[in-house]
Image 1 (cartoon, rainbow, N blue to C red):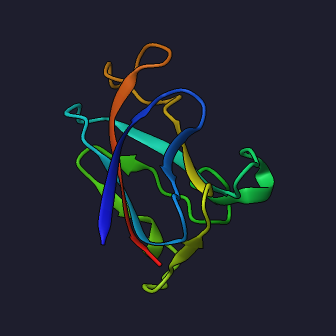
Image 2 (spheres, rainbow, N blue to C red; image 1 turned 180 degrees about the vertical axis):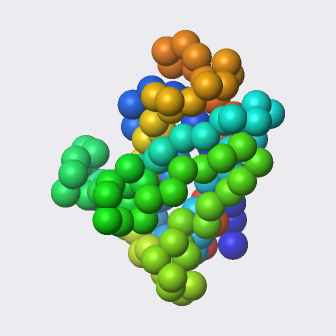
Length: 132
């Protein structure tokens, strides 16, 4: 098993993982490392087939959508994406060039760390995967 770690920026979609060959992604962990007590953000995750772009058609999760999984990620907390639906065995099988993208929405975030365009923000995304 291997791990990639991406520090996310607060602009449009950030590619957090690109498959090189056939891989199985076993977990994606989003971690808010901001030291500001009131830091939080909404997030969206897309799984984009090789050669395509981020669209509503490949959206996996969006924390700001009513009626779905809607939880912001507060400072010091993390979220395991593969368990948010209640299933603990979600695996994504990707082909060469398939990508995961994440969007962060910090519109109401009062942390001074989330400023600039783009700027690196205190959010790390860990992707656990294995080659097939």
